[in-house]
Image (tube, rainbow, N blue to C red):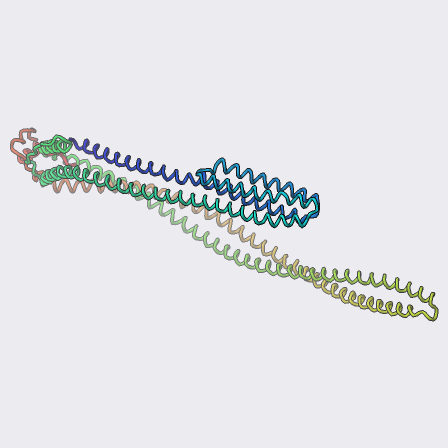
Length: 537
């Protein structure tokens, strides 16, 4: 069996193991999916329907309570409509549960108990609106209390049903977890068996390949030491046998090519010519590089001066910007004071309005009292006691009017002072803003100078870029020439120093000398070896 066939067998076993592992995972994954899907398709919708029923029952009870407490017939009619809608939602939830949630006989019996408990509650609850509409409030209240007990039973029934569905969901989750654990265990077992089997087969295959490779390495080392007399026997029929046959052919061919090393002298001559030409080109490009460097230095000096000027302008712009910022802050503070002062003025104005309103009221009452006093005086004559009372009230109102007038005077004076202060602050703010404008104008001028200097920088940088480009191009060409010169020099050194030594290292059989004709060289030994030795260059 060849190595390729063994490799195919090893790959087939690995594929079979992976297929087995995938089959186990798929089978157990289906089990996990069924358990989880049961909760998604049956248990969760059932819990949602039960929750909808419980919510609708709660709304139904609330609307029933409101019906008992409501005295308006129209509002009771609206509540009656809402209770009918609640009942429709409850019946719809029961219907949905029957369509999607029924799984076991116990589930069916619990649903029947839910319906029966709701029917019991509805029989009691339905009497309450009728009694209320008939004016039997106490009877309706009594029926409400009875319905509360029946509703508690309905709530407990729904709770038991929900707990059953929750237990079903928990059971499904536990079964899914168990199936997952089983899948993991079986996967580990199958994977372990597959890894063990494949490892053993791979070890046996690697052992055979390594044995053949070690033999090839031994032969290669022998050839590297210059011994071309080793006899190589091919016994295997697989790829290792093909490799050994190739090693044998290489050994035989190498013995016939050794003499061709003399052609290395032609390579030495060619390399010498390349070095001479390359050195001339390198000298010319070096002069070009020096000229480009001189231009670069000049451009750098101009750029340095421009950069310094830009730095000074930028520093001055920074100082002016800082000054403008301080002035702007001062203007902001002044404006804030103006705003506060104007607020105080507004507050004083509001107080003036209030006091004027008081004065108007007092004046009105004073007129009424004065009229009353005149009437009383006319009726009573000398014995008019009411006149004294009215006169006293008139005096009080007059005093209040005087006090209000005094307050008005004080507030008006205060308002005038604050208005003056506000005017001064506004003037100061205007002056401050003028300073800000002046500072900004100066900053603009400095920035203009910076812009001009930047243009000069751009021009200088372009010159530098051109010079650097020339330097880079020349440097790359020089580097290429240097590499060529170095390679040629190394070739000269290696081939001249070790040519005879390298050829003399090889030993060949006498029978192999007849394979290739002797080369035309002054050294007979070299001519004999060259019939089996390949060129190294």
